[in-house]
Length: 178
Image (cartoon, rainbow, N blue to C red):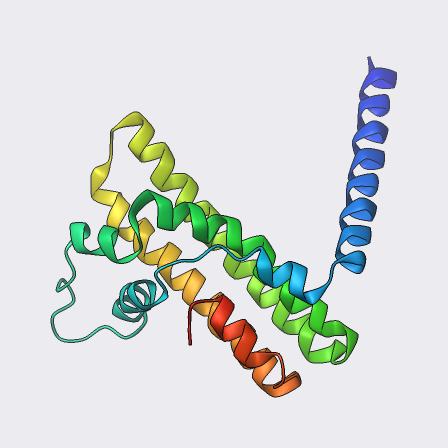
């Protein structure tokens, strides 16, 4: 029994190592234009409105209704696009390590952590909608997802603005920020 468990453990470690190596090789061979082209359009201004409602609460903290938040983030399609873009934003931040290793490594990790929050929130929304229960929590998850995506985008834009201002306008355009 313990030999089987050890074999499974070793197989998982080897599989994880191989996955990491393959992903690393794909990132090294990727071009900046190729990464930027993978960004799926999102309603950035709407996402920012929802995010700022969460990040900078005002006197009326229930001003945005759940239906309004859903529309502002682009509904299911907008959430799916944010989910897909999360990995690309991490890769674009990691790409900066070629000329600004120290800052890019830190910002990449922050973006990766924001991406974890984004994905978790979107999975919770999908799960709640699938089971058609706990709709009261969906607005909180929308706030979390929008906030995470907004922070990821802002961190990435700031990194490019300070590290490679030549690519900044193209990145801003790709993110639908310009």
